[in-house]
Image (tube, rainbow over all chains, first blue to last red; front, side):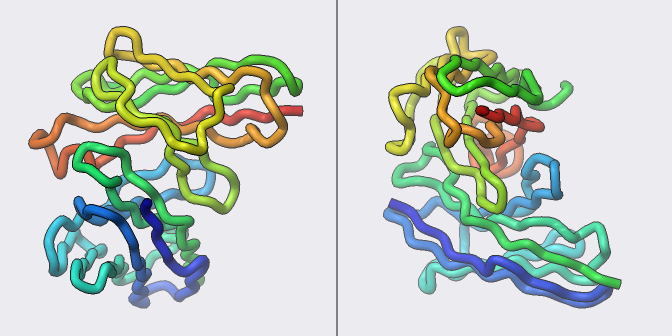
Length: 111
Length: 119
């Protein structure tokens, strides 16, 4: 099966940098994805790493180390609107199967 | 394209009743997923279709749950004999075929969800 672990809560102030870690266990690995969900909203895709290294998309970056079964989401220049839940997700046993999500990290950004 | 549409947005029912949710995915997306989410938790996978074929069902999915995607377009999720523990947000998502767009099946577009309350 698959399992993912991420911190339940993170707090930070506007303008700061925050890193949300994710460790995973899966039989067969087909990439690590990150999703954002605001209160009352639907999850939305942020980034995807299939290979080791850093992927940068604006203020958000995502990192993967397959040998460590570990990844993180880095959020820079935090804004109040970044307050949300962030989920890491991995694909199932075989390519083509569904994403399995972690329990999520609630990020609270204060002024 | 208007994205992934789900109907109804809210459903309140009494225990023991049957409920059905509908999902209309993005038209070019051949993959459709149903997830369930409760407060403070991540989306929990229920089942997944590729075109009209139901390829995977979660082992957590009881026999009271059934999903269909008869023509490979919209999908329905039916819950029979609802229980209070079924109260949750039911999320539908779709994704494009592999090789199209950004990262294919890893990029899910979710609908706004159907919130079920079982009294």
